[in-house]
Each structure stands twice: as structure tokens, then as C-alpha cells.
Length: 94
Image 1 (cartoon, helix red, strand yellow):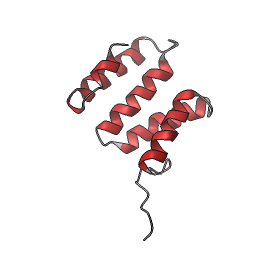
Image 2 (spheres, one colour):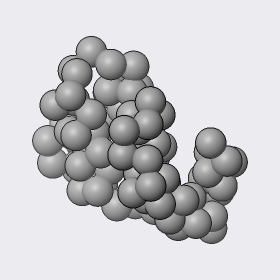
Image 3 (cartoon, rainbow, N blue to C red):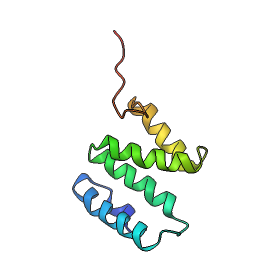
Image 4 (cartoon, rainbow, N blue to C red):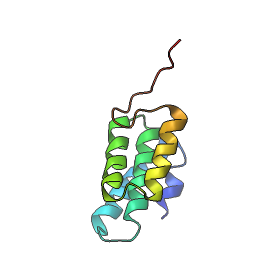
């Protein structure tokens, strides 16, 4: 999907989101729905909108907790110490 290229930078993340939303609307049964939902979550991450990113994560996780996109979200959460329930960054205790 061409929107993957659009989401490469912050200034185009909103354009990519528009493309993903349009794709989901036009092709709700397409085999790439999960990839589009994941990519939307990554755009929300770039735009610092954790609640919307978590919405994408939980939507995918409810379909299949073992799917690749769910595991990728979880790697991101671990890397950036993001709580997958709240979207808040976990602070290290001194």
C-alpha cells in the first residue's frame, strides 16, 4: 500500500492516516486490513496520540493475540516502556 511510504515522516503521518482510513472504508474485507490497522497505529505513535494507537493495538489483539502485528506493537511497547493498557511511559524507579 502506498500509504506506507507516506507515514515515513511526521509531517506526512496525517496524510497516511487519511489514506488508511479511506482504504478501510472502501475495502473492509480486504486481506490487508490488519496491516492497515497496524500502520495506522504507527502513525498515531508518530503523532503522539497513544490512546488512538492503543485502539489499533487492542482491535488487532482481540482478533488474534498471536498475530504478527500484535507482536510488533508489543515489541514497540517494550522498547519505549509503554504501558499497553494506559499508553503511558513506565518510569524506572530510582
